[in-house]
Image 1 (cartoon, rainbow, N blue to C red):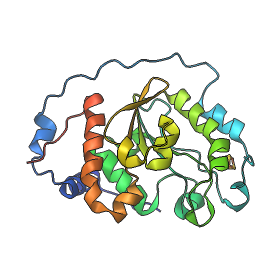
Image 2 (image 1 turned 45 degrees about the vertical axis):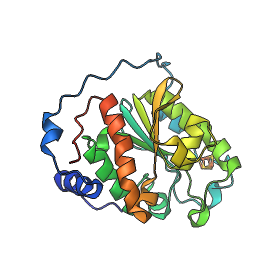
Image 3 (image 1 turned 90 degrees about the vertical axis):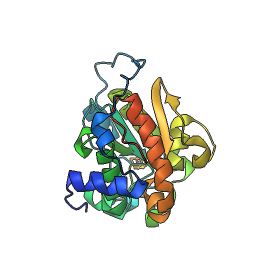
Image 4 (image 1 turned 60 degrees about the vertical axis):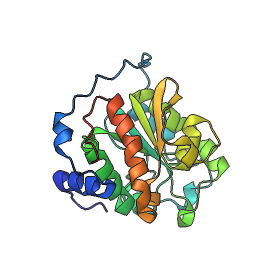
Length: 232
Ligand code: SF4
């Protein structure tokens, strides 16, 4: 379960990790307004609640017998920023919510460092049921679940999708390249900007990669018109 966090401490904690010392820039830097992004009208019937209703007590792939809860996704339907991870782990499966536990705490710090509250962004996964033993999701499972993620993204039409880790990045960009090659630049999903970056679980194992992840998130912040603190 995610511990209650202090947004200010999270903000400071994440910046210390990535080597930012000049926090005054966060409130002083003038960032140009983001360019207008292509939008598409949302069909009247396309809503998150309708998609969740269609999903039902899903048994479309072999992950269903071992799950406790379907982890559909959380956040507002009008979120301008969406994060997509890989799949639920043990804590997520028990709670029915994505990104709880240690990786979730780090994701919350990343979101806060970007100038958002966690509840202002939408968070989902490539597969909505926990792969047993936290193994990687398999191609048939991803194929069965992907239409629902795609419909969620179509319903929300965010300005930016941050794809966390290889599975999300490859699914959303349509590339088979490694995450280390995909990250660091924008891609597109149906006219929506996509920034792949490292998964928080990987960042917990390889803290030195947080600087690269922060660089990716700063590009997203610039696009969204958020102030970006400078490193000295
Ligand atoms: S992972 Fe997706 S497709 Fe498979 S059972 Fe769960 S909700 Fe259905």
